[in-house]
Image 1 (tube, one colour):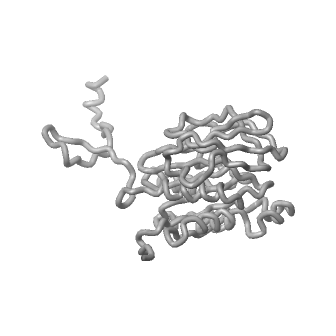
Image 2 (tube, one colour; image 1 turned 120 degrees about the vertical axis):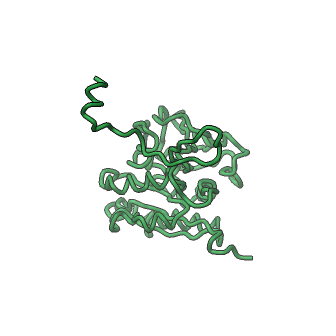
Image 3 (cartoon, one colour; image 1 turned 90 degrees about the horizontal axis):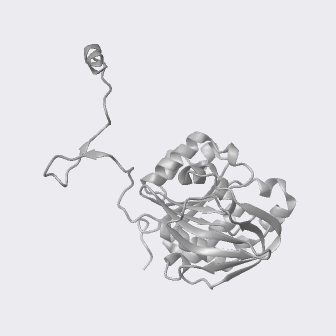
Length: 270
């Protein structure tokens, strides 16, 4: 039986789509754009369980309007060369949706995106080298759903090196660690929870290498999409509520402390 439309994971793959337009060797690897290649991998693995669409930086409001975000379960993010061109008001909008329960999968150079930095609260810097390193992606938590159906290790013959120190908060769960030809290691698969939202960061996948065609990388991304989808009904920001004594169940709205404009009261307080 096919899943009903309401049961499908509603996924949007956001791609910067700049390297593919200005660098011929990247266009040769990803003639349809990395965003479409990533989306194809998700569809390939999830099939009828997902509704997958794409959008790019150059769309109005970067393709991330309120209406679009309202109609999503999961946002997948790839960016690199134009992080600074992402409008701050769009970042605020996505941030609010993640805190409200939108799942977020951040890929590779998305570690330095405005949205990931805002959610992490750190610089998210790391060390890197692009010299066709071999990457081995080692499974740390074989019981985690994101590791289902992937070998240990995943072998990527040519890839950019990402190495520690990676300036992120301690992950809620460490799923993968990568090792590279130069001896470096990197926390390449991490999960975080922010508000009501779940986040999965997965590092393999640089524009100079055909990593997003790798069947195991595609499987991990699809697994991550399924994992970050919220199981909460509806979507809402965490709220501050006031509770009366002996009333454990019914919170009352609370807007915060009220500033006094009573001059006499202010004078007495001083």
